Image 1 (tube, rainbow, N blue to C red):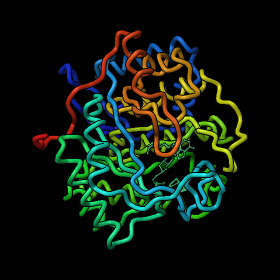
Image 2 (cartoon, rainbow, N blue to C red; image 1 turned 30 degrees about the vertical axis):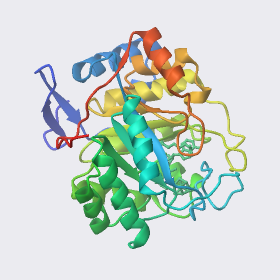
Image 3 (cartoon, rainbow, N blue to C red; image 1 turned 90 degrees about the horizontal axis):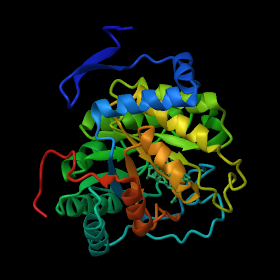
Image 4 (cartoon, rainbow, N blue to C red; image 1 turned 90 degrees about the vertical axis):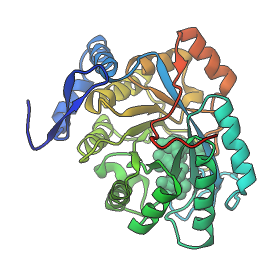
Length: 342
Ligand code: SAM
Ligand code: DTB
Ligand code: SF4
């Protein structure tokens, strides 16, 4: 179903031409999602192979450069000041600490380094200047730089881009209908505005959500419809499984069915064929077999290292062994066009 106004022609890496669609309906997403599992996996894997090496996974390392005490009330988040979670607060980390973490990440095979701050929004001044300095420092190691700092205005997005920030992570988290159940201190529209500012500044967009917050399947698919109907698909789509943190309102959330999670990954792959689909938070609770199914369903990136922002992650020994057992490998090199000497 080609629609001139909502599709764009792209060339795949193997030279054939395909279309990215930006006019998805919930019904179409439901049809993809609810196919028999083998059909869905076959479709997702077929799409995946058109654009990516199916044996390759990109590693991104996260670092919380400003932790805790956030004024927002995101019900999932251990860093919200509204909840007592035991997360230790700290201000913006010094440059030498961040540089050494970035070098370690590079050494262990990561090509992207994502710095997170527990802020509602960026405020101009000393702290933002310090972040810009960190961006320049990490960029000088040759790593692809990503930031996730909360809401940004146009000029802040521009300054980040100029400092060398390649990608900005800002999640929509769930459907517009369910959003109010999870966060009351900002709106979906606020998030969309920041995403537009990121685009306008010329950074790539990393935007996804969380599975396991009590939402229904239609909320999960509603999120995918929102993402896939953006004028440009987010270059990176993190799919998180809720990390249940004691003290947050979602600490006692329901168990996520692994097949439902894999279906979500596969549906994201089919709807956004050229995007990196990131298997993000929640891997501590996933079996190796579940992660393997996610890769087969089209996930092609992980957050690597012992820690996400404040919670635990499987770590290099485990991940390296998993890659080896699956005969898969980490992707080398980055999408960043301007190379900087290490
Ligand atoms: N404060 C900024 C913001 O909210 O955009 C940046 C940091 S925030 C921690 C980044 C993302 O982490 C959130 O948008 C959310 O999707 C994800 N996240 C936070 N806590 C999580 C949890 N317990 N489980 C899974 N994902 C989580
Ligand atoms: C994303 O979607 N997931 C990452 C990254 N983007 C910034 C963060 C996950 C955080 C999990 C909870 C924590 O460790 O604090
Ligand atoms: Fe703050 Fe981000 Fe956590 Fe929400 S997700 S409480 S904005 S750090």
